[in-house]
Length: 157
Image (cartoon, rainbow, N blue to C red; front, side, top):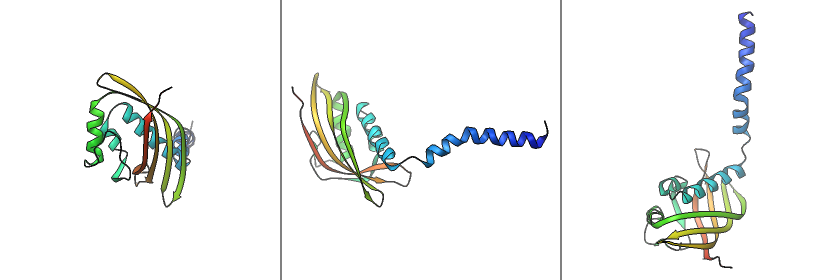
């Protein structure tokens, strides 16, 4: 085999190996990136990892509504750290998520589902409804910019 033939075959192999990665990167939709942010925040909550959760936040997160269990006087990150440190177990199951893009890199998310949280030996099922605002960040990820509304109530029956 000649050196030129080896280069041609090597180029084809390189394209075959790198092609799927490039195609995936180029064709990842905004909706998929918002879903990845929601999944990342959900995973961090379930692992009770406040630092990983805060990693999905914009520099400043506006909190328009009080969040049960988190003092309004504390910065959100501190309140979440304290709340997650008290929880022995957290599980979330989103059953409805609607994403609306607002233009200029913004997205509004309305999501609801069931959460199970265990604190002080008591596991409680809760129904949650959230309205969040996310923004496309410089690193290509959508980050939480605002918590517009929070509704949490017992999920009994």
